[in-house]
Amino acid sequence: MKKFALKLLLISLPIIFLLGLFFITDPFRIIYHYKDYSENMYVIPNRDFVSSEMYLRNAKVYRYNSFIFGSSRTIAYKTKSWKKHLPPSASPFVFDASGESIFGIYKKIKYLDKTGAPLENCLLIFCTDCTFAKETDHTEHLGIKHPTIAGSSWINFYAVFIKDYFDNRFLKSYIQYLVTKKYSPSMKGYIEYRKTKFDQITNDEWLMDQEKELAEDPIGYYEKRKDLFYKRDSFIADFKPQISKKQRSMLNEMEAIFVKHHTNFKIVISPLYSQIKMNNSDIDILKNTFGQVHVFNFSGKNCFTTKKEHYYENSHYRPFVGDSILNIIYP
Image (cartoon, rainbow, N blue to C red; front, top):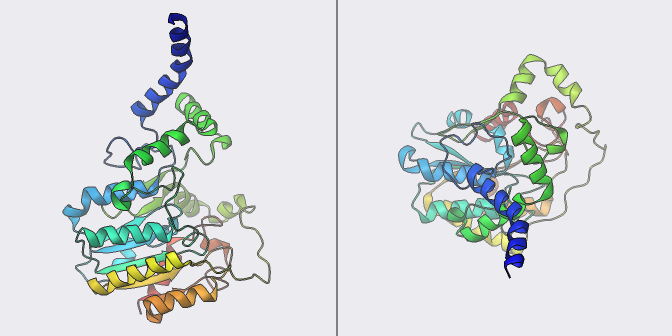
C-alpha cells in the first residue's frame, strides 16, 4: 500500500503543481479581482467575464443607464461618440463579449431588468456570423457567460476554465511565455502580444498597438496584412436563415423589456468584410419584433464593406466606421 501511495503521489505531483500554478497565477483572471483587467494582460481573456465584473463593480458608482451590447465588433462604437447622440444625463457602458450571441445579449438585458437598472438607451450590434449562431451558453472558456449575469453554475464555470487550462496547446503556450516572456506565432489563440486597453469606467476597448501602427504607417499596415484581406466574389449569396423559435422568444422578451422601460434603442446589423448579407427572413423577424424604425441593416455590399481600410483585419471594422453609422441611425 505504501508503494502504491508513493507511486500515486509521484504521478499526481505534476497535476498538483499545475493546479497550484493555476490558482497562484490566475492566468484567465477569473479568481481574483483586478482594478484594470487590461494591465499586464497576456492570456487572451474571457471578455464577457471582464465586462460583467466591471459592471458589477461600477454600477452603483456610475449609475449606468445606457448600454451597448454585442460581440467584439462593438469596438467600433465608442461611448464618447455615442453620447453625442444621447441626452446629457446618459451614463454609457459597453456590455460586450467575444463572439457574443443573442443568448448572451438576452441574459444581460434580463439581468439589468431584474436588478432594476435603468435601460434608457440601448445600442445592439448584431453580426451575421455570430449573433444567432447559438441559443445556449458557450462551453469553452473564451465564451462561457458570467454566472451572476447568466444565472448559471459557478462550479461549471470554473470547471470549463480548468479543463481548457489543461489543454496541451494552452499549457505549452502559457508556460513557454511565463518562462521566456516572448511571444511566438505558435501561441496564437492563447497568448495576446498586442496591447489592449479597457476603459475603467465605460469599458470601451482600445486596440493600442494597431492604432499606433495605423497612425505611423497606414500603407505599411495593410501591406503587411494583405493576405488577411481576401478577394470577395462579385456575387455573394445571402446568409442562410438563422433565427430559431427559441431565439425568437428571446427577442420578444427583450422587446417587452424595452417597452417596459421606454427604452430608446437601435439595432445595427454589422457591415462585415465578408459582405455576406443577413437573410431577408431574419431581417423581417427583427423588424416585425422591434419595429422597422429600430433596425438598421448594414450587412452585404455597401460603402462600408468595400474598402479594406475600414477594417483592422477581415473581422473588425474601425471606430470611424462606427461613427459614420451612428450619424446615420441618429439623424
